[in-house]
Length: 469
Image (cartoon, rainbow, N blue to C red; front, top):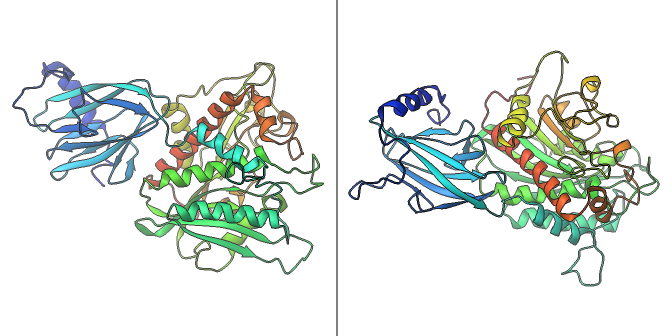
């Protein structure tokens, strides 16, 4: 993989030379009948294929010394691993790889440079596809989980998921979530920890799904809490669906588990659903600080962790006033507020700015509710609030305290979401808040793609290390 990770600088120099020296550069429709087929997509000639946004496409490039390059919004995979800079060179006889287009791609160019210095630019037709992680499937699962009816094939009724001992509703839901990860082939476990020191506090029960990486010395993960605020809990009196906090994040983890079956990872990776987040991050702390075969290993470097909590009532969704909801994505640890401390911040910015092409300086005429800790004065009116910060209040804090580089995704909350921790935190209320089902689907799809891309790129970014390493 060393060559694959090489800088594009020499490649770009070659492109500039080709523009003036090669009369056929970019003439992707002119192919000699007796010319060997060196590049195919989905087993077709590139001039014949139609690319589908959001989906996987296989490709093959033949010939040692040939190179391929794709734009920022197309993810390049070789041997199952993402190539973050979108550039790869054939080292042996061929490359067998895959493209993954974001859902927001409407045109695509692929550049091939041959060993003799000649080259081709293929301008490919793109149509809308079914993204590997998408708002439609997210919404369908949300409806199934939050709806109650006699027919369990139509609705699961996995509500009232507050953590307590005993709470049959939570146990039933946990078994449903465990079955999802296990059915996809993950090494899946229920981690149950009893808090003997204080019998008035709930026990912890987490779902931990492991995917093994090629480097046995490191570990990384993603997660979201599946428990909801218990009855009478502050500030809104507790909830029963917990649609926004945090059924939405729970379902996103289920969709990531499906997508990650198709990729390889550098480090051992845990995909987790936490319990007792609403009772002091007890679930993620149980995983991080207990000794068991499927707990966080103490002999591996913990590189990074990405957290999914309270999303969807966020950009690009709009308030009834027409203003966009806030979108928060905070990386950490933010040790010094005046400088960038961790490399995962570069990944966070690159995904939003260069891949998703989000409006990074979009502001409202006013301010949002309480937000980040160290930078709120300059961010209080910023819609895309994407930067390093010390903000806590969710399970990423458990891993940040252990030196991991972290990203925390969050939409509207507190004064921007009146149903926070209340019985009104339902799927129907989420739909009403953003102006319809389609708007909710779009908002969830955007943040799910952001987090998924962050994970894939961070996985292949060696500079992302434990801050204590």
